[in-house]
Image (cartoon, rainbow, N blue to C red; front, side, top):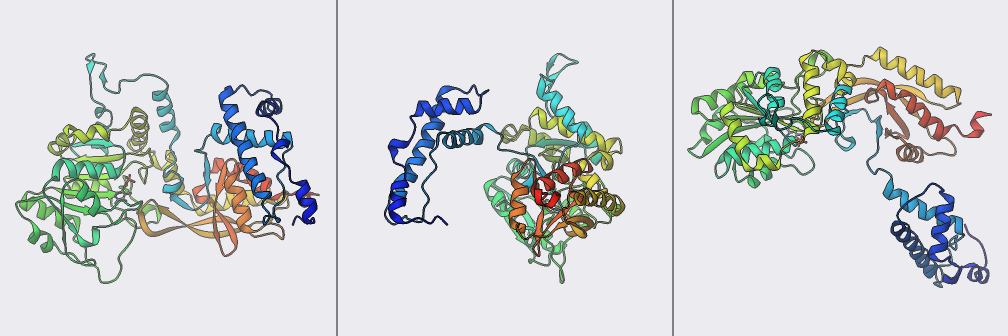
Length: 483
Ligand SMILES: *Cc1c(COP(=O)(O)O)cnc(C)c1O
């Protein structure tokens, strides 16, 4: 606490006249950051804004009932530092790398799937120069941006045709707008859900001009419920993979084979929104079965939509695979232009899909590498980290924990994992420690539970372990701990 009597405080409070002139302050900023060659108007703005905010503080500390406020430090160096900090907030990247130690593999808030080296190389190469994005090099004439991925997607999923848009929400919106506008779409009441971030199936249907026909009850929907709802106005049967929650107990969902049979009997297409839509079977990794895209196509879905950056492990994208006649109508719809993907995404997606084609997805794609980490390899890494921290007198415990898939895949499914658990110290609370790790470079985000900070190693790539120990030493290896 600032403890002086009020007369002293009053005389110690600086006045506006004690503040430096703008030009003097700019000079000081330049002197303190010698290599700075920023435009004058930017420096002028930052210096003026800083002085204005200091004036506001002086104004309020001259206020009679503000005697618990300490007067602002208006030394030239302090002001110049503040101006520099103001500039840096604009000049440094706002989007920053994060080490994900939360144990949630597909963390939407942390950017979902990290990309493979092959995807990154391809994206870099396509971003650096021109490409044949919409140019047929063989014929020397205009081509289509969709051809680059169609062959791969058809080969991998067994579908007749394919198309890629910005994300899965866009894919669903395009399909409904192009094929169901002014008509009816039949959905089970238990699947008229919110996917997350305000993306609600009923709202998307309304927005695309389609009418939602809900059938069954929240927990039980039978094949005959769909069949009874079919009219001349029915455009689609829609199945939504309820990927972010699970109904348990007295539940019946109509199976995909049943839906496909109804669709074919009445000649009404079946749209299957898989959400994550994996290409690899999940059960060999000790996870529950997540429906694969191939299965869905083989079972008779006419269109399947899924995300590029969930279990597929690629860049943000929405993939649509299925019947050629339907895909032709999608590509011709005006919205296709508004939702189209750019060359960088196509390049990253192509490289990601090729990992699957070569049978190397589980080795090359970070999402699958993380799913595939064995308890032994996690233990080895936890142990090595633990020892390195001990050398710096940092107390951490190796603890078992559970990772989740996240991103609306496999709700409730967990993978056994290992992590480091950090306890509060007499001088550092767990919240403060978590804040220090979050705000450093690179940011490190774990999860707090029972007054411990847990760093789950499953969502950390082995090549990031070194960075974790560096960040922990920075935060915790106080000089008093070392001597
Ligand atoms: C995640 C998800 C979506 C939305 O996909 P985005 O790629 O995030 O737009 C739609 N449907 C389901 C079932 C999902 O899980």
